[in-house]
Image (tube, rainbow, N blue to C red; front, side, top):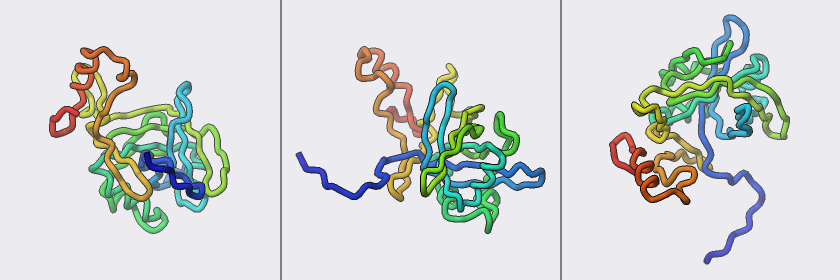
Length: 209
């Protein structure tokens, strides 16, 4: 068994979800923006809440503060290049929507922030708390609406996000979260249940994982 190498403290948690967060200032003529965020996570289940962490210098920061809302858009393989672009360009200098050919659409429960039509799904969030942590400010948002593309559902209503080939970030690298290794409780599932459940997870090419 190999030994651990001791390193200085840093945010090694990996991989983490990579998402595009859309937001908009509350002014009537305001234009929405997109910011790429990997500092995102689930923080509560009842009520459902997620967090995003944003630096104050970011163009989207004031939009989220003043509007009190944001939309977390899940990113699949097809949106990976757009997500990267939205992370290295500022909305102060360009129109990310036009440059990436993305379409803003109304998001459930939002007064200002749109969702991104091309993404597999989204979470509409109302800001419930802001916490200054140091380099970033954490926005804790209550999820007030969710949208998922129809193509990710089977006829029986079961949802298959794995088919969207969702993207994760691992220290500067984007990777697909595709292969299904199990499901909650699979370690104690009866053999027939395990076989039946696992057979429902298929990639876009149709091969069972």
